[in-house]
Length: 241
Length: 290
Ligand SMILES: Nc1ncnc2c1ncn2[C@@H]1O[C@H](COP(=O)(O)OP(=O)(O)OP(=O)(O)O)[C@@H](O)[C@H]1O
Ligand SMILES: [Mg+2]
Image (cartoon, rainbow over all chains, first blue to last red; front, side, top):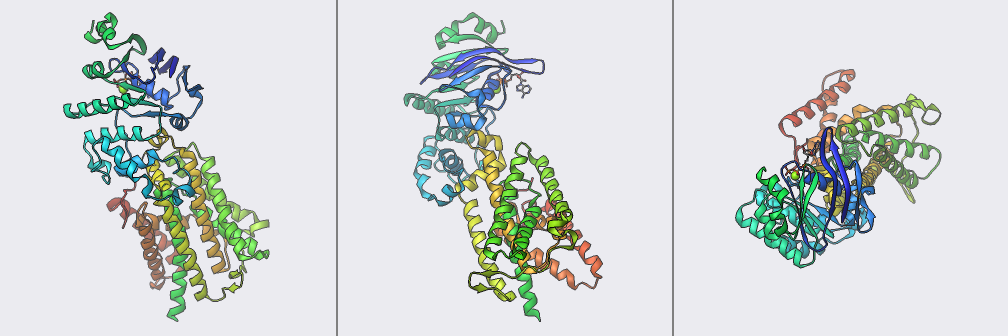
């Protein structure tokens, strides 16, 4: 995925300012930066929730800015939200079911289809995030950590070729943080392309292979974790220079 | 004496069952504040009535009533595609007003306030349905099939998508689902069943005029759906029995008939307010009305 020259202002605030980023395939990419530096805005633009003022985004040969949000998702862009976003009247199992299945938009196909067919897959996916005991639970019965995990399971279940994760370990306990790290590493092993936004520097340095640093909507540095750690501009931004 | 009256009430219940269940599909399951339902009911009734007095066999007038009402449901969803929540409610209410005034004013076609008399009882291939008891049997069959189909839909994967759309439309689009198309399809199906229920009404009463398809009727079916519970078919079924029987019982109050009509509206309104205040999920619902 190539993000070219993307700019976006909200009133007077420049959330993104001629942002250029190239997502490395089959790697864990990270986007870091202080609060309000435009990270989430970038995800919102990629997934189609907001339109940029200028620039283009090339993904699988398409200029995806021309596509509607759901078309981009169908093309393989899967994302999570900083504030976990689940469907409150659906069970954990149904969340995975609708993410997995591509037939449900057709009334006929979904009525005729046997219910059992997805069951095993759903269980297997929920097992990877330790939620296989929570098949029938509604969102209100899940803890914060479990919701984070379910959110992750949803984007994994959905057909995708890139995962955009907005702060996957924000607010979770250390044990769960390790669990999520393990899940992401396994996905990486399988050859998935991951982009994560994260404030937890240790987490990023442990897991990311390529890092972009945003500050006031500009990319101020890009490189491997080792390089980023030594980068003067980055140190200034983070240590309040 | 009591027996024919009982059959009459059961027939009314059957007609409103289909109407209420089809409204619950769009309003309850899909979360579309669809106030145009009464107009779809009317479109079905008029389609069927006009075809019938022009000699079209029942089977066709019945199906065309459903298809045309379904098509208008689709059109309504299509025209209001960008509108959300309250705005959609307003637009669909506007649609109900427009259809009502068309029924009233296109006198060349609809005979306006005079209505359309002489709609005959159904004849289905060889089976001529002449008396009310046979009509009840036939209606029970249509009811059963309609509820069976809608139940299938709401419990299918498509139904799960509708539930997700009701909770968070953007969230569902981000999962790659075209929510606009989901709405079109839902409104078509919902309109189809409203249309056939209109057809059944027209062929039963034998006479229709625009007033049957006015806002007061909308209040009745909204009361049924909300009393029974959003996204609960069992709720809608139970509530149809309760509301229709209650409104029939009011007939026996020692009041002049000029008061009973408006009196019913007041009772429905009170029921609605009580539900909204004390039990927003209705009698049998699992989901709060928001
Ligand atoms: N929809 C919006 N309307 C107005 N301003 C917005 C909107 N979305 C973001 N902003 C502003 O744009 C800037 C960038 O916000 P963004 O959410 O992208 O930051 P972020 O890097 O994700 O921050 P955080 O680390 O706190 O999540 C902020 O100043 C924010 O207030
Ligand atoms: Mg953010």
